[in-house]
Length: 162
Image (tube, rainbow, N blue to C red; front, top):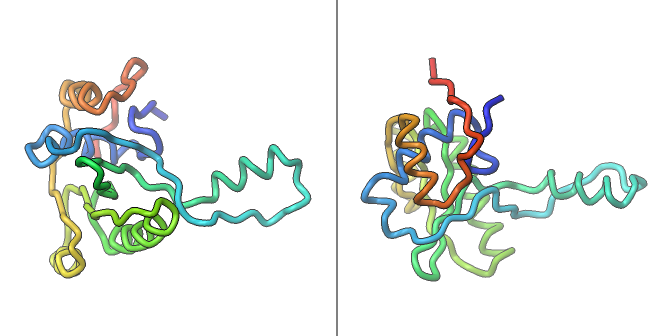
């Protein structure tokens, strides 16, 4: 599997996020965090070695793709091709746990390459900003890495969606 420069994002999410970073809509965000853990996590075997338990617990938490910051205001981003209702549900859960765990009320945003009208309608009803973007080229991906200060030094050519 290719190395992706934005921790936790899937291979097909990466070119969409990079494309968004290069848009005027992304300019107000001055800082980015990736793979932000929220929620309670769960582990089914309490008798595990303490180090194994801690790792299993951390891996079981919910993981936000990206949090962009405008001043002191966070925006939680879900990034996925074909913006389906599942991403909407993820964002609603992330908002609840982010507010509970971090003590801040986040804005919500969905980055995708396509979204059905019903999902766009429900996102609008709940104040979720939707950004429809194409896939970034490799050169654009490298430019986005520089903007968000991600490590692209070992980036391998990303596959394109079928």
